[in-house]
Image (cartoon, rainbow, N blue to C red; front, side, top):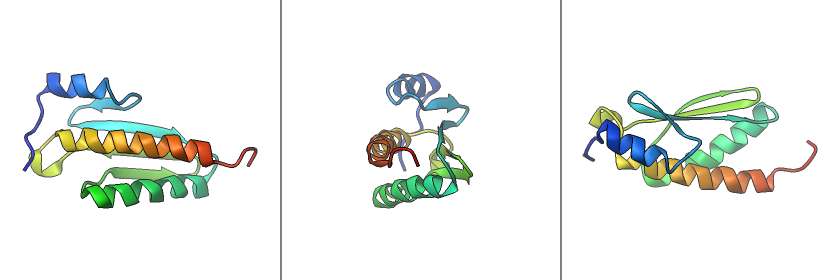
Length: 104
């Protein structure tokens, strides 16, 4: 099991994965999308990466938004695994933003 990070360690790492924010035992990220289908498309891309990494976000999905929350449940808080997945998610979001059709 990965080592749970101290609050200071988590604060240092979250500064490197902005716009993720530290919220208690979690890091969180919210995104706006054009509609439900676009939220779902982005979530599918993130889900594929999460499966490969064997680490999964808690998700809230709706019309025009996607909210992600990361923690390592079996460690009882944040570990480096959460920040690695957050970094990967940011790369996915960046690529997804470039691939979105304009004016839809």
